[in-house]
Length: 212
Image 1 (cartoon, one colour):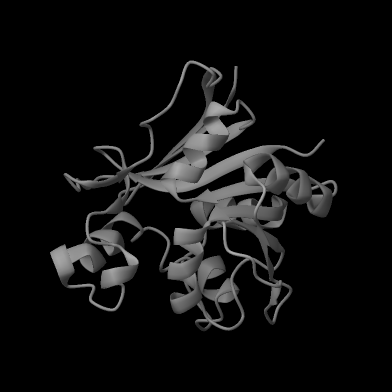
Image 2: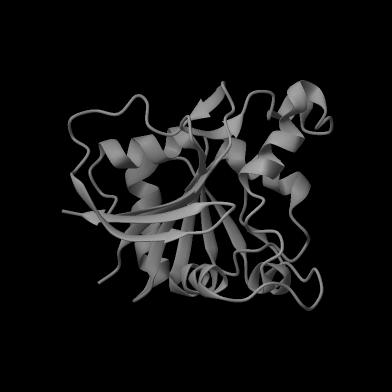
């Protein structure tokens, strides 16, 4: 059965993205030092072999349990959902061969034809809310799973809808002190979770929560 999951990086003080990481300042990573902060949050991923292969950054890289975990996360994903803000940032930053290789459903009020990229990624722009996006993503995923990619507001909406089966967090030992928090604006509708796995490394602790 298709499962709905979240897989994100998070700071010790609960932020997914630093202050200043916005479309207005996307081309200026020195603005409020957001580029360095985001790099510190996601530093655990950049030298992994599978990450380098998936983004066609060259051969080599680190292998081991974290690399295996990243590979499994990618291979289990049959479709993804994201918000317009995340898509617009990625539209500038992702290579032509976008890193998803699946259907991606973008929550937006903007009407736009599907955007087909090399390597199997097609972005579909959904105008009828989180329920419509999830219905389409489940159909596209088939026997695989649906990943809620972000940003924080989109994840919060799906948590509040009670449909997220698993939460995977790479908890990095950094503090932002501001930005976009993951766990705010949540309600009592969010289900209970239990810890299924904890994988400790110097750059991040990888936590996996499943519905209790």
